[in-house]
Amino acid sequence: MRLDKYISSSSLLTRSEVKKVIKKGVLVNGELIKKADYKVDELTDIIEVLGERLEYREFIYIMLNKPQGIISATEDKIDKTVVDLLEDRDRILNPFPVGRLDKDTEGLILLTNDGDLAHKLLSPKKDITKKYYVEVDKDLNDNDKELFFKGIILDDGYLCKSAKLEIISNKRAYLTISEGKFHQIKRMMKAINRKVTYLKRLEIGPLILDDSLPLGKYRHLSKKEINNLQIIKEK
Image (tube, rainbow, N blue to C red; front, side, top):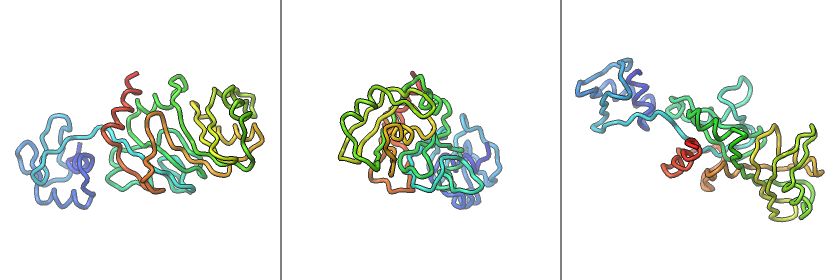
């Protein structure tokens, strides 16, 4: 791995800052190196920057509060993507969104380069729950809660798994599902003659959207959050 890429992925330095520190010299196994393309072994070499030993990050885990108008992809020729919202230093390890949110849906997106974890979170066999806040155009009632619990039948005849509808007020609710069919929540609501007017994802399994995180902003997961996800990965 190139020295500049190693430092970018193992620190909070920007690319321009990485260039500056390398020009001044970086210690690699005690030897002063000033070449950005110098090859290092990320598993065995000891790299020190500004007097601090770096620890290589193999994986990256990011919580993003996706705004409307942004698509859940790594790249797109027309629309802005969730990856476009990341700073350069957080793109080094090539994170991708785990699952999708519709362009007009807000809320929690997990970005990572941990393919094994992503697979486990998206696997239908794992029944990982996703909780949403939803607003609709017509009043909801207890009968709707029962319908969701029994399983909504979509327009193509698919029988959804049991879901939990928690009514907050007439037209507002929390909805927890354990699947990820195309436009599923909109289609589920359509099946009971409701139209979704606003949708926001709040939770993915044990991961809960940080309510202090503004739309369009992100942060790295805490060690506790990562450990909670690792439990899913190891099952």
